[in-house]
Image (cartoon, rainbow over all chains, first blue to last red; front, side, top):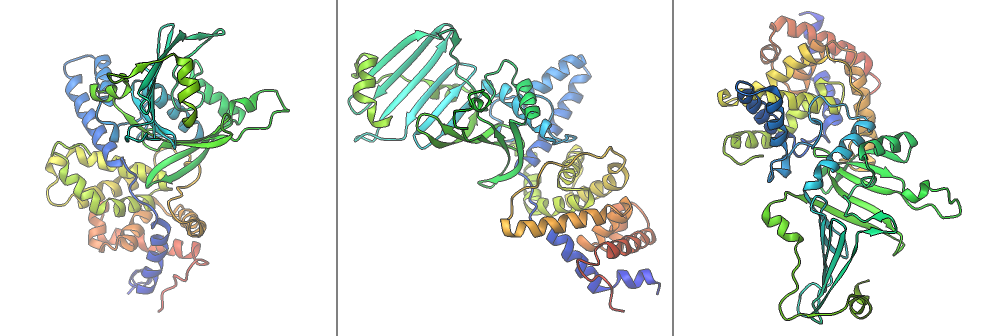
Length: 311
Length: 168
């Protein structure tokens, strides 16, 4: 028997090595969405093969991109924008680039933000937002619902208060002191003209940092830290605000949770975010129609008389 | 997983064996992210023949992973690892496991791709020499030699972690 045979046949050596290997990988689980990504890529590859035989490469590419954003496949969809799965290099720059691109491409989706105050449905593409308060009135209805819409130069806010069966509508110009009011996406820096460039700049300046992977309710996420915008101002007398913390889904790069400092309430606010495709049923979540029989009142009266308990 | 019936078997297979095969992929590559890439790429290659993979998807996937690890993986440009490591384990446990993982990664880096694959197949997956030879696409004697040399290198590198010296 050679020395090699003796080493390989030693149960103690085998067991010891197996223990080391086992301990080193025991925490590793298949990340959610990995199989979906593989299946999705396989389908797109097959679609590409079918298409390239009959149409130009440009058309095939467009079809593949269209396949990525088909509504109803959000659970396992690829990150919008550049291909993210397979062959990627997950440096901090890569993660931020993917996050910014995902947010840009997610503007047609509906974000559902859960906070302790209630649920907010937002469509950036439609420039519509509806808030449903978690506080209930004596009949079990939400205490209030609020719909905000920006349509061209018109800003409209409708508020329905169920306890007293009243509603109000506030209309103004969407241009406020030279600034155009818009309904913005969830991720910080998204209101910049070029969010991808804004993130690159923030990375260079050290105001945006990728902390690393974190498990969030059993989901694999990537945690970002973004310094509050006001901290970049030159007003050194103002106390520095805590940074925003942003959790991204590790496969789609969409924001799934944020923790931000609310300058009004001076407290940390945690938002849990899910994403919906813009199906007719989901878009209906953005609508708010005052129930029949409710009384219309001036917006100033709504603010002064009825909104106090939830503010 | 899309619910059109074509991938039902795949979902069940991955539910049962996905974690174990992913761990194998991680051991075959220079880190967790590379292991996930290898596993996902291998999965995609298997899906190309999914309608023909009857009875033994695990063996088929394993063969792809090992072949890619030995023939294709190391020829690629080395990629930067992802910043940080997943915090999917308790904090107290995490540091020691991280140390161990890094030590093992460093030790496995000393092996050739075939030695590494042979060691993982024989000592992690506990495949027989014949099964390892089939997975690697080489002879049994080549497996013996690669595993023996790999084990010797590992024993020297990991000697301070655990006694790998066989009791003769």
